[in-house]
Image 1 (spheres, rainbow, N blue to C red):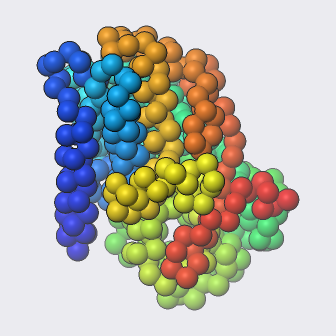
Image 2: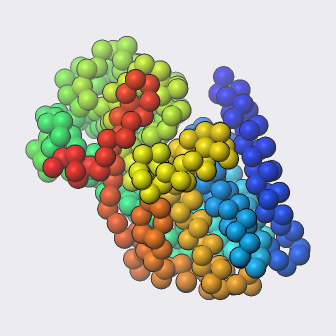
Image 3: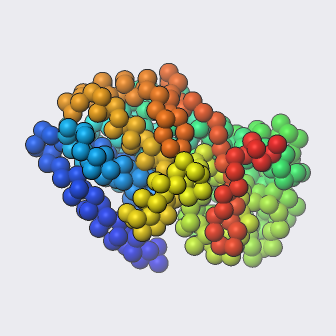
Length: 386
C-alpha cells in the first residue's frame, strides 16, 4: 500500500521536475549554468515533506530564469536521501561531485543533516536547511562549517509545545512520546523541560519508527490518565498511532510538531486526526498576506496548494540566487558560503540572517489544528497563549 502511494505521487512530481528543468535549459558543460540542489526525502516514508520543499526550490529557479536578468542559467539538482541518516552521505556526495552545484537547499531532516554535514563542510559547499530543527546541529564542536539553518530550532518549537499545553490548554499531566530519531528526541527533551518548569507532570516514553502495532502504547496513554499528549516524530508513524489512540478512547488534547504537519497525516489517519494540534516554525502560505502571490503561483505550477516549508524553501532558494547574482556565475563555493553566512535577506516568510555558528536569528513558532479534515492555521503561539 505504501509503495503504491509513493509511485502515484512520484509520477506527477517527475513530470513537473522535467518541465522545470527544461525551462532552466541548463547544460552542465556549457559554463553558463549554475546549479542549486535540494537534499531531502523524495522517496520512501514522509516523501510529502520533501516534495513540499522541492517544489518551492524549483519554482524559485524557474521564476529566476524567466526574469531574464541573471546573465546565466540556473538548473535544479535533486538529491534524494529518503529522510534517512544512512542514505544522506551518498546523496550529498552526488551533488558535491558536480562542480556546477554551488549551493544546496537542505538537508530537510535533522538526522540526514547530521550525517551529511561533514562531507559538505569538507567540500566547502554551503547547505541552507529550511527545516532541520535539532538544536545540536549548529554546535560549533561539530565542525559543520557549511551549514546554515533558516528556521527556529526545536528549542523554540519544543518550548512552544510546552507553553501551549501549560498556558493555553491548562494540562496537568502530559504523556510525551518521541520516535527515537534525532529530531524526535531533541524536540521532546525541550518540551519535557518546559512542561516540568511550569509544574506539569510528565510521563515519557520512546517508541521507534515503524512500530508494527501502537495498541499497547495507546492503552498506556489512556491508563496514565494524562490530559495531554505530545508526539515528537513524523506523520507516517503518527497516523497509525492516532488511530489506535482513538480506538483506545483517549479524550485529551494532542499535539505534534512540524514532522507531522502535512496533509498526508490527515489522509492517513482519517477521522482520528481530528482536533490534533500541530506546531511549526513555518507559516501557512495560503493564509499570510505576504505569501498569497507565491501560493497562487505554486498552485498554478503544481496543481496543489503549498505545504509545510514550501514557502520557506522558496525563500531560501531566492536568497541563494540573490547572492549568486551579486557574485556572478563563476562564484566559488567557499565564497558563496561566506557571503550567505553574512547575508540579511528579506523573504516572503521572514528575514533570514544567521548567528556565527550558522543558527537562525528568530524565534517565531506557529500553531495549527486539524478541523473538519483540514489543517487550519491558528496563529503565532506567543499571541495564542497571551
